Length: 409
View (spheres, rainbow, N blue to C red):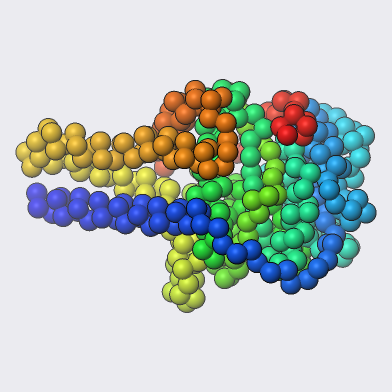
């Protein structure tokens, strides 16, 4: 059984080194670095783009929040892509003040296809914009979002993710789980990497892209997670993404477990698609460019499903060693707790730390903190399911919360 022990120790070291690396990077979010210099003092022209499929209940609030931006009104336009809508999304968006493009293509129904279709037209007509921002229809946007993104453009940034917050974090333990997850990502992933000169990732909504960047190829994505795919393609090409803590967008999260399961399943399947498509290219970029940014991007794609598989294998090896009389019951329990406690207990302590650092109210989130391990545990089950069953069909998440920007501020 010596070979099993050697394999177990090797996997333990892999997991340990991976998490030590993540902890060291995360600590850098606590250090405030000098802001980048302004390279060009300019008010840029923006198009704000909202892909929307049957979002009549919420799209008006988003358009309203965009119209209230603390930015010159003649320097940005609000576009809504009414994508395969069977309700009055287009009518609501027009009435709110948006420019509406209606698209009907039952064979290509994802947000990525809608963006490809719309941006191809804007590229062809050589639309007079410096950059565009993407939002989901259920979002509402802080008044200073465009002002913050304009500053990033003036600092020479090409692709920038804004701060993704939650507009309904206290609805129940599910929305609280999403909130804690995104707050953790905002500080310990995106901000930490931006501070170090590494690359954050796009987060699905509330991000900005310099228009010239996509003109050669258009919005060319093909997976269910177009945000991660676009991020990885930029990292492979040596292009660092930016981060804007003060460009805040509020996102509505599903309150039902079934919808949450469906949404996170789609994210996991999309991640697996990206892993298959880009792991080799990321490894090649590490070899050729020899930068920590490329290595960090490779670790990201290897850090979810592969690390999850390694942890499962470690648990199984411990049981094999126990039943093979190579380990007693006490050692088995200690080893299992070594994997389970960091997975389910440390995230709660991390969440409390982040809420203190970011001045979030802890009292309304107590129930969410208690059930956060359940939220993470269900995600582990989703990962396990997606190893064997992958539904690549896009399913709509219903958004119904009538929350306006004044309600979250």
